[in-house]
Length: 120
Image (cartoon, rainbow, N blue to C red):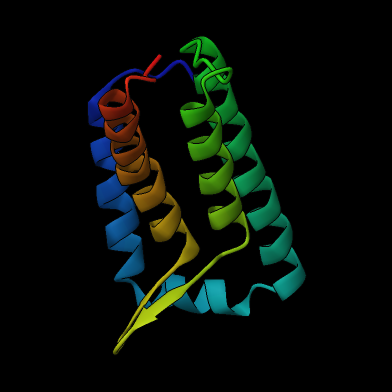
């Protein structure tokens, strides 16, 4: 989109919150057929996935490093398969679990590699 202003994200976030609080907007979403929601969801998450891959390519992420490869692969599978984890009354969705895997898994594996002297 070539929009680099963080102000645009603030306005989008506030707008999304205001729409979420509107019962009329909720009614419109509820009236939308399931097939339409499914198609929009596939397109949205497909675009997010491709943009994520583009970020990896632009950032020159080294997938020859097994840590990077393992974290990317496991996070994608956890997120795509929607591996939910329930703890008491709380259920953590696949997206949350994939994020935790990406953020903390990388840190843990990187520290283990440094301790073993195998870090790239």
